[in-house]
Amino acid sequence: MTSISLNVNGRQVSGEAEDRTLLVEFLRTNLGMTGTHVGCDTSQCGACVVHVDGQAVKSCTMLAVQANGSDVTTIEGLASNGTLHPVQKAFHENHGLQCGFCTPGMIMAATDMIRRHGSALDEKTVRQELEGNICRCTGYHNIVKSILAAAAEMGDAQQAAE
Amino acid sequence: MYETNYHRASSVSEAASLLAGSDEAKLLAGGQTLIPTMKQRLAAPSDVVDIRHIAELKGISVSGSKVTIGAATSHAEVAQSADIANVCPALCGLAAHIGDPHVRHMGTIGGSIANNDPAADYPAAMVALDATIHTNNRTISASDFFVGLFETALDEGEIVTAVSFDAPSKAAYQKFPNPASRYAMAGVFVAQGNGGIRVGVTGAGSEGVFRSSEMEEALASDFSPAALDAIAVDPAGMLADIHGSAVYRANLVKVMARRAVAAAG
Image 1 (cartoon, rainbow over the protein chains, first blue to last red):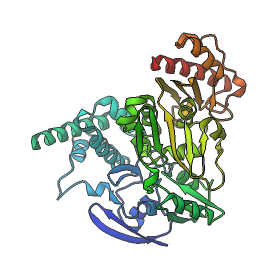
Image 2 (image 1 turned 180 degrees about the horizontal axis):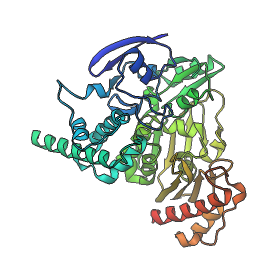
Image 3 (image 1 turned 90 degrees about the vertical axis):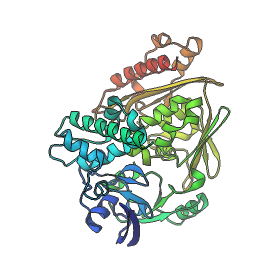
Image 4 (image 1 turned 135 degrees about the vertical axis):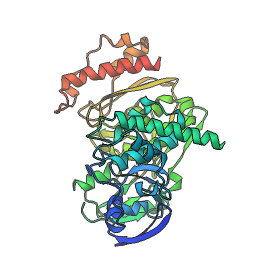
């Protein structure tokens, strides 16, 4: 067993886990944060996407101990004081989910995409960059729409702030 | 996943001694192949030595036409490097199409070439760019480095530290991704450099990455897609599996090569 310390959503947490424990297992089982999902468990579906040190990664393809000392952001860390994050709000408004299973990973992938591309994000890029996230309900159209709406809103907000 | 013991190395020499300290240790860089393989119990290292945090293995330097990429540099970093884009944009494009964005944040160039998956993208670029693979003991030319399927010239305990190459005057990479896995079913990297024209082919060869000397000869006299028309790629050396027959792959190699030459301009 190794002692693992992470900063999850701004909160310092620690726990004991075997070295073979995956980051997603540590989040769900040790920390009880079940917002991050396990879909395929074979690095393909993206339901488990979280941010480690600011970058989107598949938490089923990383050992918890590899993230020791890192900052981790999960779906639980996006809303602040009961107000949805713009990407969450856009998924709500654009019907970007049906069953919702893939949604935590979709939203974490989307926020990472918007961080990298800003309001310049276009539909082609969104579709390309959703390569690592699988949805079996929506046919992706409303997910793409949600991400573009959020990118535009976040870009406008950023411009207004400048 | 079977039990394992994790070690985080802070230097290449520490990683080398950790590796030497166990018969069954494996290096862990981005882990995008090793972790899934361990989850499937196809690999069961007693120890994993994490080299992702070693500063001396990271970073990109471009000086004139000489490009050096640290082994622990991620695909995302190569894809976004303005310095590499200035001298060899084809390599940025290749890195930008490995896996998906999340995989590219973790996966590394050193990990990709040391694993030498027959469908990996980087090996095609390395042989076409006549790259040099640097290890903690020596330098190896890319043509000697890739030995066979998942096999390299690396000795036991040897660690890839960087790759370097002279930027070509023209280059392009085109691949046909498997529609489900997105791994290359054929990927062709064409480069025109100081040493002439080199064509690296991945995804298709039954012995892994290879150079097509007949394409290189044809392109040397006429660098145009039409120069490849008369070439018949021999299906005898091609992979055949449920995704495509040898004949199909042989044709794909030619199609990708033509597209790469057209893209290189």
